[in-house]
Image (cartoon, rainbow, N blue to C red; front, side, top):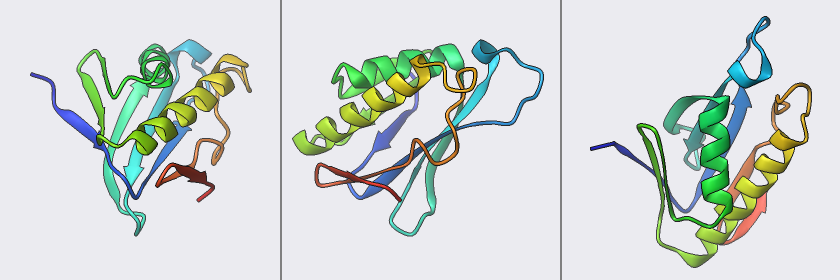
Length: 122
């Protein structure tokens, strides 16, 4: 059974590339984390590019639970939160697919505040 990481109301999601000079874009590693209102990490996970892409696709399709490999993310059952996460994932997927700097997301580009259905920069 895979552990489940929860996406809760009143949290922020962050996505950023981990430093790697010599890797091809598809071999990059990414840090995805959820932080509470006091910026404390609720959870952090390192993903490779194919897993990140599959995860973002699942969330962008509106799935409340996304399982990729040994990772399982579950969105707290709230219609507005689910819609907000879906929009966040769609934006991240668009940025990833657009080939920004060789499939790298610039720092801070993936920050979004998940709060009652609205996304605000952190």
